[in-house]
Length: 287
Image (cartoon, rainbow, N blue to C red; front, side, top):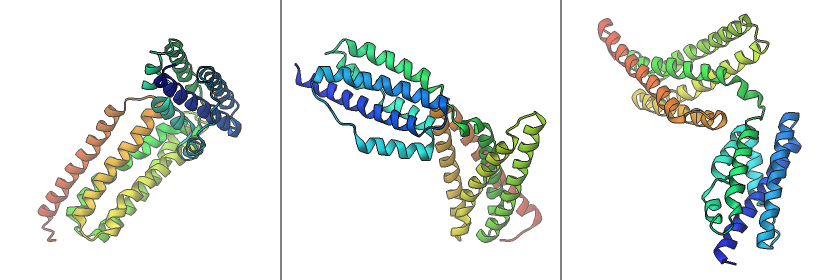
C-alpha cells in the first residue's frame, strides 16, 4: 500500500477517534436531553468512521488528549454551538485530507460527503440557551458601540480632559445601560415574552461590558486623542469578535455584518467629533 495513502488514512483515523471522544464527553456533560441525543449520534458516527480507517491502516490509535481537553475547555468559555460548528468548518471531514484520500480509497469521498451533510443537519438541532438571546445581546452591543463611541468622540474635543471624559462617559454609559435594559424588559413583556427578564439582563450586561472596555483608555491615559484612537480600535475589535462568533454559531454572513456595524460606529464617532469641535467653537470654550 502506498505510504502516502497510509499517512493520510492515519491522520483521518486519529481525527475520527479524537472527535468520537469529544462528542461522547460533551454528551455525558450535557443536561439537555436533545443535545445529549445529538452529540451521541455524531459520536457514534465518528467511531464508525474511525473503525473503517482502522481496517485500512491495521493500526489502533489513541485519541489526541490535548485536543480533547482544549475543546472541552473552549466549550465552557465560548459555548457548545460555536465550538462544534467551528470544529466542523476547520477540522471536519470536508478538509483537503479527505480529497487526497479519495485518490486512494474511493469510499472516502462518499464517506466525507455523507458525514458533512449529516453533521451540518444534526448540529443545527443543538439547543443553547444564550443563543436564544442573541437579539438582546446585539441590541446592547450595537447601542453601546454607536452611542458611546459617538459620545466619547464628541467629549474628546468638547471637554479635553481624560478624567472628565471618563467620568462623563461612565455616567452616560451606565445610565444608558439601565435605560436599555428597562426598555427591553418592557418591550418584551408587552409582547407576552415570558423571558423578558432574561432578555433585559443580556441587553444590560452586554451594554455595560462594552461601556467598560470603551471607557478604559480614558481612565488609563492622559492624552485624550490617543485614548480616543484606542477606543475606536477597541470598538472595531469588539465588532469583529462578536460578528465572527455570531457568523459561526448562527451561520450568518460575517463580512456584511462586520462592515455594516463598523461603518455605522465609526461614522457616528466622526460626526460626533465634528459636533464637539463645532460646539466648542460656537460656545467659545478654550482648551
